[in-house]
Length: 214
Image 1 (cartoon, rainbow, N blue to C red):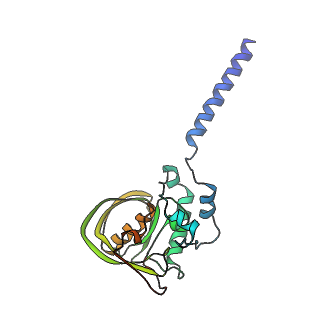
Image 2 (cartoon, rainbow, N blue to C red):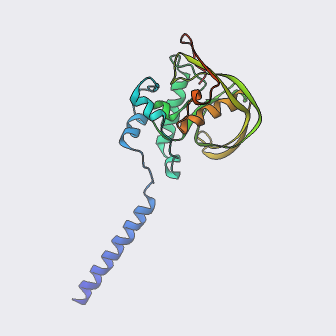
Image 3 (spheres, one colour):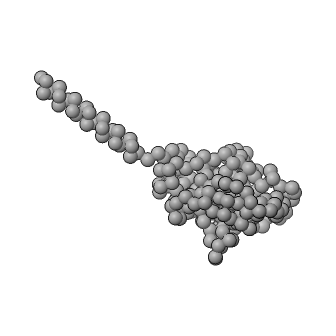
């Protein structure tokens, strides 16, 4: 009888240890079903939300959450990055930057064209934050894929120090960005906080549809 009880206790202890180990190894992935539906969608070019649609506008005005550490190392990160890069470069959009809220996801990811690098590559970044603003304040023209048919004049700093997770290199980076690329970074990180360029613009004018800057 004592032997049977001892064996049972050992089995229970082993099962508990195994469950603890499995819980430690379970990725902390918290994507919702809706988020996964967008990330795993068959189309490589995603629908771009517009402010003229009430439901779209609610997403565009929400703040975005960070990716968890496990999510940064998951297959979903690369899937989303690839689709955002494809979307922003598609002739139907022809932009130089896009943020995840613009494709329906309130998660901190942006894709930008780096005019400060050779060949002006498009790159994707997760969990981007502006650590500090530097340089001079300049006023320049901006558009937005989510506000088609309009253009504005927006004051921005011409240099920013960025912190982000580089999706291609899979590492955290602190990066000083200047010139037009700095403007794009500010525009796209604003999207992650529910801010549109029209909130900052000193002037907004309607015009015929043309390829938008961001």
